[in-house]
Amino acid sequence: FMPGAQPNANFSFRVRIDTALAEVDTFDNQLTRTIFVRTQGTPPLFERFTQPNILQSNFISVNPDGLVGWATANTNGRPSGNRSAFMQLFQYPQLGARDYLETGRLTAPNSGQFLLRFAIAYAQRNSNSNDSLNVYISTNCGLSWTKVFGKGGSSLATVAPESSEFVAVNPMHWRQESINLAAFLGSGEVVVRFESVNGNGNNLFLDDIQLLISNMPPVVAFTHSFVGGCN
Image 1 (tube, rainbow, N blue to C red):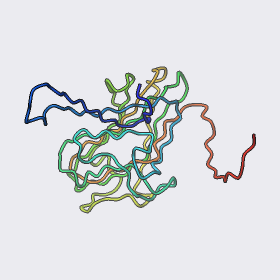
Image 2: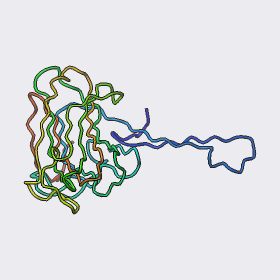
Image 3: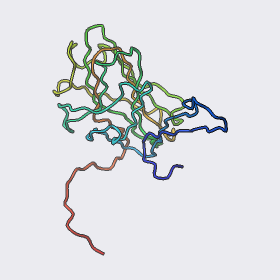
Image 4: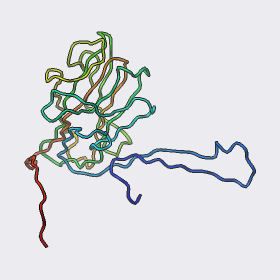
């Protein structure tokens, strides 16, 4: 337990070793490791990536090589807003690099509907580009993963190849995907992972991620102004 820890956040810890010996090269006496803490929640889940920082979403961005990772970017063509999750594969020279976008721990229903839906936009750099997007489910808090979706290259693409950097700005740039998660009914807590695999192609966008169950409460949007309160 870490007092004040924020949900779905990364934390860096530094351990330093002090010895009684007089050392000149003390640079190797410390070790830093980063961990993250997952929230626990209950579906339905709706993520539209409306905030400028990916850490303000319901997802954790896991960037193993510390280089290009999942972020958010200005887009268009979606009714939910003008910002989406984004992997800048166009400017990512590390071929084969894998980066992840993961949920917290979500309680799977025991019966009924259990669906994952999301919108995707992607262009190949050329007809040989082979970036990939995979989706996995974990039932043990990320210790192991089951693949439920995988597309790459032309099967992933939503538009024709573009030699310049692709940005999704048109409704025709997007495609809706749907995954039936009935196999995970009654699995307790599940974690959803989106994995990008870099083929040095072009940019990849995700938006409107929905984890849906039966008998969902109605979804409403409203604004209000707070004038006063009562005792």
